[in-house]
Image (cartoon, rainbow, N blue to C red; front, side, top):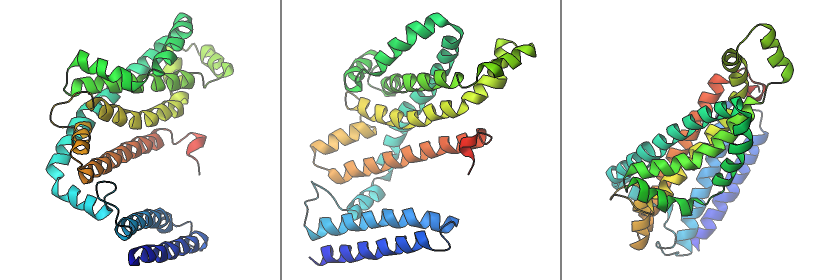
Length: 281
């Protein structure tokens, strides 16, 4: 019970500290903005550790954070190999191909009323297909290595990116497009100088959504066939061996990679769309 009482005291103290920081005169400083979520995260880890140890929860049900951290430290070569296989080869390759193809297709749809009426409903239908059903088919078509995982990622990110880009290309109004015509601007000049810049917030919205979809798709695809490496492969094997500490270590690395990927795209958005009202404080 000492662990349980200890974490309750820690939780109350951390809660009071966060309330004080949030209402203090330094609340708008960068240090406090960083400290408040950091204290919140540390509190969750401490409560998790204390409750697991205090209530003697078996490690096969829920290992404590210190056990997961130790597993991460001793398995860095394995985790790095799995990260390269799943994230760099599968997720990142599929993300670039899928998002690039979606932007090109969105421009073609914008040029063709036939595609607007014909392809978009089909695209929405395909986007609703369950990945758990399409992944085994794509693995059989493209083999068991990272190429099939990249194909699954392409399917997952293509249509959300397509819908966002098509919507973004409609962001300009008729008066703005008419003004470009009075300047004798061609379709492509209007596209690159007016419509694509105006569509950037929607395009980046799709890119940010696709970052998490790409990693999820690559990991799920590995459940249906993979060489002896990769996050999905490791998770499925370690669950069967009751190695839950290794499963949580893979989840931790996946969450870290996904957060860093999302953050990188968000920073890129901030640099490119700094002029947009959504970026103003």
